[in-house]
Amino acid sequence: MASSLPSKDFQAGGVDDVGRPTPTDQNVLQKHVAFFDRNHDGLVYPWETFEGFRAIGAGYFLSMIGAFFINVALSRKTRPGKYPSLLFPIEVKNIHLAKHGSDSGVYDSQGRFVSLKFEEIFSKFARTHSSALTSDELMAMLKANREPQDYKGWLTSWTEWMTLYNLCKDNRGLLRKETIKAVYDGSLFEHMERERASAKKKAN
Image (cartoon, rainbow, N blue to C red; front, side):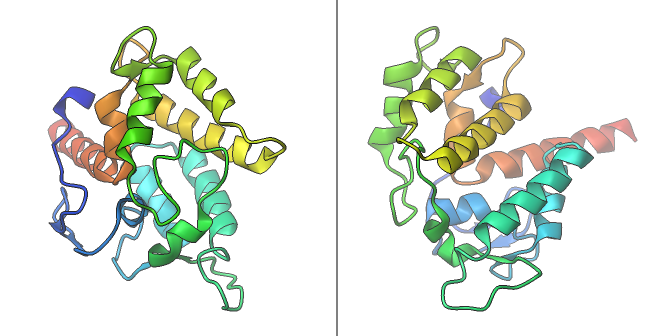
């Protein structure tokens, strides 16, 4: 899959890979999350998170659990000064406020892409292949990124990266550099959705 990923400008807008209109002024963290904003109204509700997970091939159970925990965890953080909502919407424009600790640092505090931090993932941890991570190397990176007593950040980072690894590793068990880069702006999700839709058409 990774070798066929489309090249995409992080700041480009217009139309996504499956034909949906996209805003032109989003930073990369907002684009990463905007894939799950299925109707492009600036809010991501749990049912949209579920639909997004299913669109990229996640199982029903994982999609349900992911939708529940992600929206419950992020909704209040992205809605400062507002009353909590039992619908648990996530505001895409404020997603940088939900940035957790013990992460890679590839997103800065404003949600912008930090190239140096991205390259450090591979210069520090990619020992078997210069442009890919094995499962052991991924675990070494997660351990190195841990901040003292940031147990919530540890769990969140582990969950995010292991979900990515299990969905996107190649047939040699490698998580490739271009795949990781694509996930940061959401283009990987669009690519996976398009591939899955194409496979369904062929099956029918």
